[in-house]
Image (cartoon, rainbow over all chains, first blue to last red; front, top):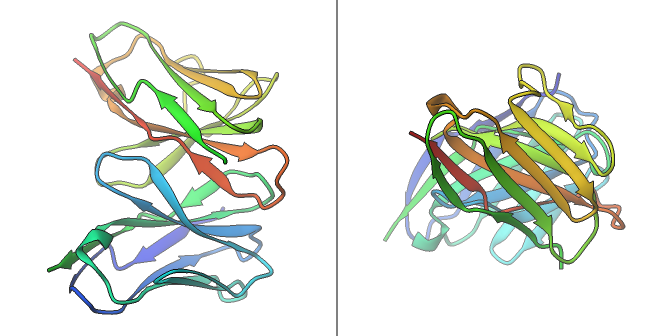
Length: 112
Length: 117
């Protein structure tokens, strides 16, 4: 059974810092991995999607890497801003169009 | 493209009543939709997978008679919480798989917060 773990559960950093969020999964037979952002009381915003054959994806200040063999992914946020404060969730899918299994999330707070 | 809309965004109901939540894919056909539940400060837990025109597949521990799911068209899935009780109060989120893209990316609705008094 696939299990997804995110570390740390919460993180507080001053504005401007670069930071890394970690995600690990127990079954390396994944189809893809997605990183999401969730603001309090809101739905999910997709940030990055990495296919199992890919090593990383970049969007603006965000970079996500994937090491499928070791069951790990990282989300790197450069030059953090207060507007980045949110909960970040990673999720893996076992097949195309299949259900996502979510980690518990990392609650990020960026202090001005 | 790939927008998923949920309605209502918030609903308050009395214990014992039934509540229907709609999930629509606005600009694409969704062959498969998923319903998740999220408790405060917790992650998303998959409740069921629905495929257009067939019965939903429920995750272990989810009562199918309690949470009725209908996926009658390629753009609409509904979740009905029957005889709701306070413990059903939660944030419900749907997601949809794009029928013609092969990336496997899922698109999420804005969520529906249910409060049962």
